[in-house]
Image 1 (spheres, each protein chain N blue to C red):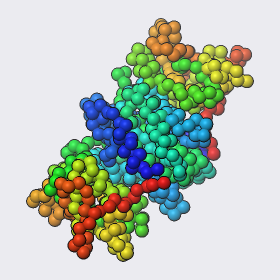
Image 2: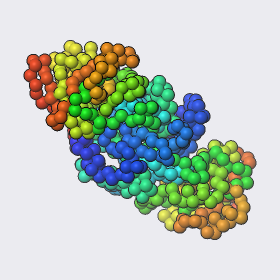
Image 3: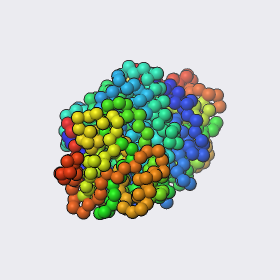
Image 4: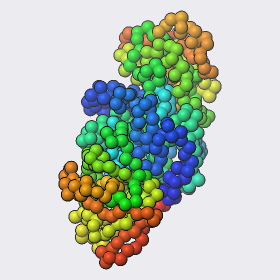
Length: 303
Length: 303
C-alpha cells in the first residue's frame, strides 16, 4: 500500500468546518480552534526496523528520535511547542531499564524545547518496539506558516545541509529547527515552509503541490552534508536521502533575503537552492548545466 | 514489566511548572495551559492481540475502539472533544481497503461526538496492527473533574452496568459517556470521576489513591450487565472484568443525589455502589453480608 495515496484518500474524505479546523490533514500540523485560540496538533510514530534499529541504536536514541521528529513538524509551522504525550508499544519481555531509557530519550528532546511530556500510554504487544508521540503547539508570534503559500518568483531556501543522515547517527541526533523557524518567521515574510523528512525532492513536491506552483532547483547550490560528500552521487544523496530534518521555505527575493543568506540569525547556514516558478512541476539544473525533471525519489514507503 | 509501576516511576520523574501543566500524568487526561486557555490531552493505543483481535473483529471495529477509548478519557474529565489525530502501524502487506476501514471506524466514533480526525501518520512495520489515537479537548462548562477530589462521606456511583464486556462485542461497540459526563458535571457537584477501563476494583483504587481516601462497596448494589449475569461469579465479573467504559464518580450524599438516582438526565441508569470512607483501603460488603478487602484484580497488564 502506498502511504501517500492513502493520505490523499483521507484528505478527499475530510469535510471540516473551516472555522473549527482551519488546517486539516496534509500540512505539517493540523490547526484546530479551541474557544478563541488556535491549537496545532501533530502525531508521528517511529518503529523498530523502519525508523530506527533498536539493537544498534538503543532505546534512549529511539525515544529521542520519536520526540524530535514531532518537534521538527512544530518547527515547520513556526509554532511553539506546548506539550507532548507518548504511546509506547513494548515487545514482550522488554526490560524495565530499557523502558526507562525510552522515557529519558523522550525527555532529552522535549526538555530542550520546553515541551513537557505530560501523559502517555504503555502496553505490551506482540510486535517490535513502536513509539508514537503527539505534540500540541500554539502559533508563533508571526502565525502559522503553511505549505501552501509559495508565490511565483519566491526564492527557495534551506537551513543546514542535506544528505547522508543514515550514514552516521544524524537521523537520530538532529536538533529540530524550532528556534530557527521562529527566528525566520519573526524576521522574514515566509510564504511557505515544510521540514525535510522524506527528502528534498519529495518534500519540495509537497510544498509546490500545496501552493499550486512549480520549482527550479540548482544542483550546484545544494548544501551537501559531510556525511554525503563522499557518496557516489552526492547531489542525489542531498535530494533523496531524507531525514535531514532541515527547513525548506519560500520567501520574497529582495534585499532582506540577501541579509538572511549572509547573516542568518542563528548558527545554521541558510542556502538559496532555487526559485518558485509558474509552470507546475519540479526541475533540476544539474552540475552539467542541463535542465531535467526532478523526480520525487526520497523516502516513499511502499509495501 | 508492570505497567502501573512504570507509570508511577514516570510520575515521580515529572517536575512540571503547575501554571504550565496543571494536571500531569496520572489522571485520565493531562491539562496544559496554552496562552490563557486550558487544553486537555490523552493518548491511548489499541494493539491487535491485546485490545482487539483483527481476525475476529475486523479493521473497522479496531479503528472505532481506538477512538472510543480515548473519548472515554475525555468523558472521565467532563471535557469537550476538540479534535483527534491517529497514528496507524500496519502489518506488512496490509490491504488498502482494510486501511480505509480503520479510518472509517475512527470516523464512526469521532463523528458521533464532533471530534474531527484532523491528522495522522501511517507506516508499515513488522508487527501486528497498532492504532494510537490522541485527543485534544477543552474543559466543559463545569471545569475539569479530576480523580483526586473525592471527600469522606461522598456517595460512589456508576453509570450503566458492569461486567462481561468481552463476552459479546461491548468492548468494541460501547458508547463513550461524553454526553452523560457533561450532564452530570453540569447538574451535580462532582468531586471526582474516572472511567472504568481496567475494571471497577482497579479504577476505584486509582480514584481513592488520588483522593487520599478509602471506599466501601456493597456487592448487592452493583449493576450487573446482562453479559455477566450468567457468569459463575457475576459480582467478580462486575468488579474485575474491565472495559466497561462507564463512569465512576463521587458526589455529596444529599437530596440531589436521590433525584439523580431516580431520574438521571440521560438514558443510562445511575447506581449508587458505595461510599467514600476515611480509612485508606477498599472494602467490599459481600452478598453474604460479610465485609472483606476489595483487591484490585482487574486488567493489570504484567509481562
